[in-house]
Every structure is written in structure tokens, then in C-alpha cells.
Image (cartoon, rainbow, N blue to C red; front, side):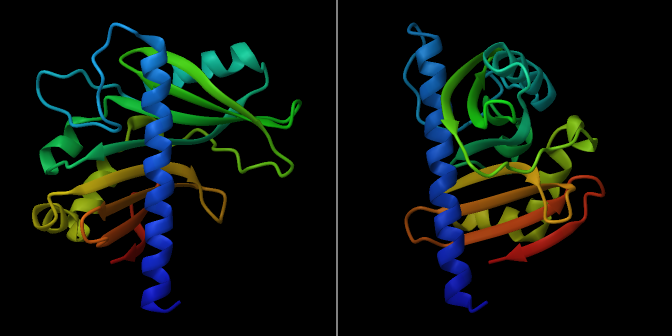
Length: 208
């Protein structure tokens, strides 16, 4: 694929990622009217609570199966706005999940933040998405984020302070879980994408 084509693909993916983050935060605001408004994505500091992936997944699964009993996990994602290396590794304040119900042929979007889960959207689909099997991803995204930082991610964040970072976990082409980290500088559209095998932790794709 040509370089320009890769850049266009990255920009589309990042735009979708930003939309997912907005949905997640919007769902959380519906959960808690008393919470102060905050921009989409995480800007973790030592004084802010983070949510572990597996804990968030269990809460999201309970919410999804409360709506559709056969709901199974399709993907998990989170987002940081203007993070540095330490903010990424500190963890995420919110997660968004997609679940699929074969019985209802529907997907559910579930937002989780600080221990609360909310189904924010249900959509009928005609093609079944890939189901994410349980595996080493249960331990969380730290190794994937370290791989991203090692693949020029640390330098990218330092050089691009307006960066939005999206982290997504979904089934790869071979059926195994894959982490994808996309960093997009919203000021100049510079982008960096790294995909990491969810079982081995090895980098399987890298584009800048």
C-alpha cells in the first residue's frame, strides 16, 4: 500500500477511535449526573482512579448479558488525550466494550468508568463479528503499551503534545487477539500505529 494510502487509513482509524471514546464518556456521564464534565479519553494522574481491563470487562459483561443473555465479547478499547509515557502506563479511567448476541443478531456498546457499566447502544448487524477468546490479554495492556513506546511511541508522544492515543483489543486475521495502538497528532495529522500479538507480545505491524 502506498504511503499516502497508509496515512489515510490511519486517519480514518483514529477518527473512529475518537468517536468510540466519545461514546464511552457519554455513557458514563449518563451514569453519574453529579460527575464533573470531562473530555473523552483518559488523562491519568496519581490522584485519579484507573480501571483495570479485566475488572472493567467483568462489569461490562454483566451489563451486556443483563440485556442480551448470550452476549459475548468482540472488542475492548480505551483512549488517552495528550498523554505522556507515564500517563499511558498509569492505566485508563474508562473502557468501552462491544459485545455480540448471535440470538438477536445485535451488537451492544458498553461503557465502563470507575466501576460502573452502562449499555449505551444496541445495533442490529447482518454479519457476525469475530469473537474475542479469553487469553493473556486478561493481564491488561501494559506489555502492549511498552511495545508501542519502544516502537518510536515514546519519541512520538514527546514530539507531538497534541496526540490522541487509542488502544483497541480485537480478534486478528488469524483469530488470535491483537492489540492495536494508534497515536494521532490532531494538529498536523501525524500518525503512528503499532499492532501487538495479544498472546506473544510481539509486534506484528508497525506504520508511521
